[in-house]
Each structure stands twice: as structure tokens, then as C-alpha cells.
Length: 415
Image 1 (cartoon, rainbow, N blue to C red):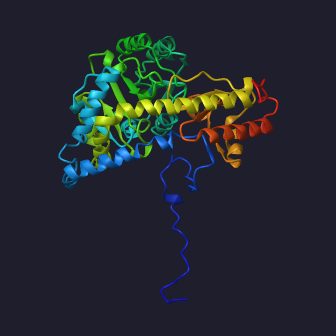
Image 2: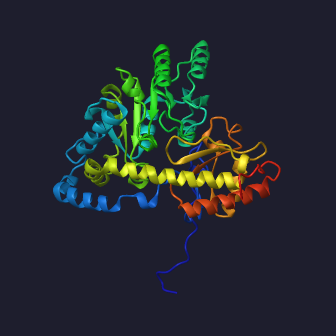
Image 3: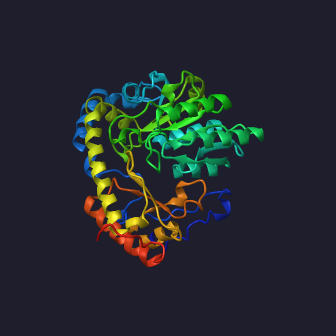
């Protein structure tokens, strides 16, 4: 053995130094499973690679020298041309009138969520969320020690009657929630699109009880028909609505570009803690360059691709599960929210199915009441090919019927 070679030392044990309350340790990544229905991945072939390459070449030749400074001479809010595009996009599609000084570029919409929570929340504060909602929002609130109050959703999204009852109850206990978190346009996981009439009722409650709204519209570009109701922020003249969005679902998740829209009083407090030197500069430059002339056409094609995959998934579920799998046809997006019969535990199903190469999101992760989510699951249909969708649902049905024979046998539409 060479004198400089030695047996690897035992790893330093940090166990006793870790702070309390950390989530469980992550496992080593070994690649995606063959039948991957989890996460927010998108269609591989729909990533506009050639367009992004051309955009990168053009913008870097023209403005690459601006990478020599933090903020690219655009300042801490982010690359100015990208903010200008977002302002035009929000005005045209969501009805939001905002200046580029009210738009902050973030490292994915998740950073926007984290920044708002850091500015507004302290341990013990109360937050109202939809009782079926984004799992990442739930886990973040839990780690902050927030009191999470779930409110029912229906075919039109967050229920205004249930919200009023909740606000009345909290007021009777002298509790003022810090915000109401909602995903009104292509809700995650239910994929509903809230009507403008419902939005106005919820805005009225927000005003009456003095509770701001936190509006997450990450999937709003993927409404099948291409038209959506005006955003909450477009329906009020004050600044009580905080708005976040993303390019992860419309262009590519790995770009990690999102945005946050709010007035300067809150924005100034957010900027004071966003001390990361700015979100990825090259990504912002490329995205702005590409989107100026290609965004609308790209999203129109993407919607058709995703809807075709959804139809394949629906047909596969009806064929293999029949009436045992209940769901509403989504208004857009990349997820199908499925309800299985009593007796099915989708957390256990997810563990067993993964052994057969099938990855699913159990419903307990997407509900404030994990027991109520026990028999639900969320399937992402955007990333797998149509053939993989068919094969994956076949595998999932076999596992489900083996593990839960009494509960998972519905009438088959056909075989």
C-alpha cells in the first residue's frame, strides 16, 4: 500500500449536534423508478431545447458581460426583461395590473412561499389552508410551528361558506390568521378552477376579517381551454393579496424560476431577508429571451400534449380499476386526484408499489387531515410516456388488488 494511502476514516458523527425538529434523513438517490407518477415533472419532449439554446446564444452574446455584477445591473428584484415579460403576461392572462417593481424573481415558487412565511410567521401563528392542498406548503408550515387550519374544498375550490365558519370560530377565540393560502387556478391536487364569483366571495371575507390572501398560481398556464378567471390580485385594489407563480410547469422544472408579486411595503421586508445574491442569472436571461416570442405557442402545444396523456391515464384507470377508482376529470394541470375504496391505505400501497417500480404520491401527504387522505392518491401524468402510463397503471392495479383484495376490486369498464 502506498504510504499516502490509508483506510477511510469513520465518518464524523453529527447526531448529537443536530438541532431538534429536523425531518427524517434523506435517502440516497438511485434514479427514477420505471413507472414514475410522483412529483411535478413535466413532459420530456416538450422542453423547448432548441429554442432555449438559441435564446442562450443570443442573450449571452448581447448581455453576457452583465454577469460580472450581482443583479446583472437590474437590481435585487431580478432580471428586468423577465419582470417586464411577467408583468405583460399577468395583465393579459390573469388581469393583474402591476409594475415591475412589484415583481420579485425567485428560485422557484417554493422560495416565494418560504420568503412570505419568514416575513409573516412565528411559531404558534395560525394559517388557513385548503384541506386538500400542496404538500410542500403543509410541511413548511409544520416545520415553522404554525397552527394549520384546513378548510373544505368542493368542485369550485375553497368553500366560502366553510371559510366563513372557520373565520367566525377563530374570531370567537381572538385568533387572527396570518393569511389564507389558496391555489385557485388548477388547484393542487384536485385540479379545480375557482369561478370568479367564488373568488369575490372569498375576497369579501378576507376584507371583513382582515386576513390577507396568499394566492399560488403555479399551474394557471395549464388550463385546458387556455382561458382562466381573473386572479384574486386582479379583483382588489389594495395589496392584501400576495401572488406567486412559476415557469416550472410551463417551461421546465429544473430552471427553478418563479416569481412573487406584492406591494412595496411587504416587498421591502422580503428583499431584506432574500440575501442570496439573486436567483440564477443565466436562467433568468435565457427564459426572458425565449418567452418574448415563443411562450404562447409553446404553452398551447404543451396543453394538448398533457391532455392527451391525461386521457390515456383515465382510460387505463377505468380499464384496470373500474369503479374502484373515483376521480373528477381535471380542468388542467399535470395531476389526477384519485379516491380508492375504504380499506385501501395508499401510504402502504405506495411503499409496496415502489418495489414493483411504480411511484405514487399517497393522499395523506396532500391533506391537512392525514387520516382523511388515507385512501387517496395523486398521480402525475406529465412525465411518463403514454405507453409507460398504461404499463404503470397495470402494475399498480396488480399490486393494489393483491394487497387490498376486498377493497380494490371495482366493476371493470372493460379489460
